[in-house]
Length: 263
Image 1 (spheres, rainbow, N blue to C red):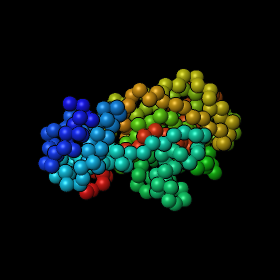
Image 2 (cartoon, rainbow, N blue to C red):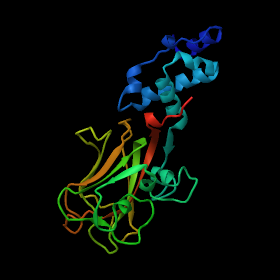
Image 3 (cartoon, rainbow, N blue to C red):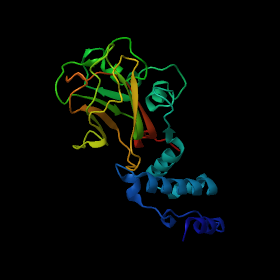
Image 4 (cartoon, rainbow, N blue to C red):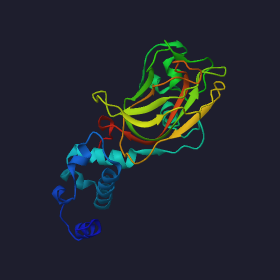
């Protein structure tokens, strides 16, 4: 029976909706990396039924599944890139408390966690800030394979693009070789490579007003909590300095299970 016929059959019935009647695959809801197409399809069908037949039918669904469905369909949001460091990004949205207040760094709101925690010049927060910094920003030591990491504490993100800002006030030291990577949790041992840049000159490295945006293939369809910029080669100046003074990310934002709305 297709979804339309299933809805019609429920519409002709005066009985309560049975949870067992739905074409539901529980694995898609409990997976740590929900695939967008199947997951969204299941969720949207459920919410259509719940809206059509009313709140009384919630009692026939496990509470955690209902919360997950409602959270996904009603609280998931998408953020589309317009221009570098626009007001459409996820970090800007979080840092303004959903566009309700002036921007502050999301870490001060306990929404993200930044690694490493010490920089030679500037602060770790500047590396992942939406706002343009007032001072140069780089890691403590110019060592090979340096990285900057951000973890979303209450959300997961299916990324579509990210923007970075150069971290040096003069020309030089622009990043050229790096991987933009992600993983679903701190328990994951392996990072997923979203972009691999080799001798990429898009970020010119003129000064701290210089920015560049990179788009991510949308075929993965996976939500991640942790992202990092991992420098796996030399900079424009043949050094290992990782100089980044700004970051923004775009895509689909999903509230985590424990933060789902209650009914």
